[in-house]
Amino acid sequence: LFDRVAAWSGKLGEEFNYAMSNSGMSVIADINRKEFEKYVLFAHDGESGTSTQDEPDGSHQGFLRTHREWYLNQAGDPKLSVFLHLGEAAGEGASLPQTTEAEHYALLFRKNQDENYAAIAFPDQIFQETLIFNNLTLQDGYYALGYSESSFDLVTSIADAVILEVQVYPNPATDHLNIVNAAGSDMHLYKLGGQMMMKKRITQAFENIDIEHLTPGIYVMSIQFETSLQTKLIIIQK
Image (cartoon, rainbow, N blue to C red; front, side, top):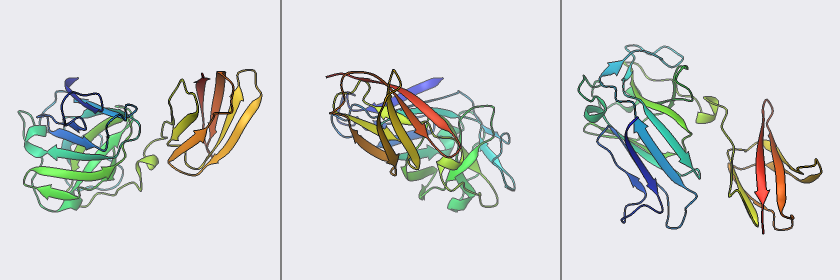
């Protein structure tokens, strides 16, 4: 991967919540000072020009995408503004067509490189060659910019494109746990020996769980959705 850039609270300088690059993608994250649990990191694969491969589901007349793909990794569920520059994303090749109609572009996402993309967002603003996507909550995976002569069919949320990976932090923990991407699930926390210590219906994308009453040790957390189950090993220390 090329041109790795990141934003995190420990980054030197005043613009620690900026991850700026000349590779076509830049990001501003809502990371505040001392929010060390949050970061966003991305890099690209070095490709240039455009591609017609891995088209999202639906009929997209004249589909093109940036041949360049960015891998993004993040933690703490930051809200992001993503800036995609048509010329810089093209590298040494031809860029996507330029138009002022937002519905002809879409941010594309896929969890793995052997999958087709899903179109997850239209740009909120187009300024010259820069497309701006505001207030996004993204997941780890691969991103590109798509173009279509007809409008894209967006998934209703990124959750429709992938089974979201539940995040639990801090780990080890002392008095609380933050649970992200588990809305609509049932959480159970067990001692390693099997005794259930907590259960809770998760109703929000970000939940803060009080664990101050629990004794130090190793616990297993299960997150049960309607069609899937995720488990996490949790360490509690005082």
